[in-house]
Length: 138
Image (cartoon, rainbow, N blue to C red; front, side):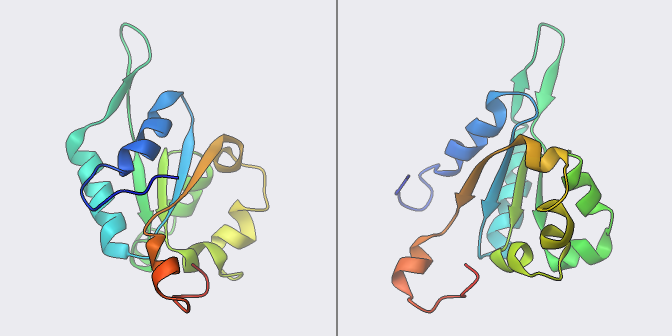
């Protein structure tokens, strides 16, 4: 468990795990869509890469699964299932709703996401401790 203040680079703990080996996937559960989008934007700007060999570098791919981008790009779930993204951010509601793709397909079927998932990080978990009735799915 990592407990540290805002801006203290806690995200590096799971980002580092995603860079540690090829095909590793990290799922980050976050209650804040704007935070997920900011993390994805930040990763794109920093260009985190892992050297595979002398000629090949591996760029970290990430995505924030939100209702808005799922409507705009329905094929996004297929990309997640196929292991395109090393860091997948999602709200608890997106993951726990039995009518959504994650519960209906990703969690049940054999796919690269399930095979390569090595870490589930719960971001902003102080919300659970501070507010007893904060979003039941979270």
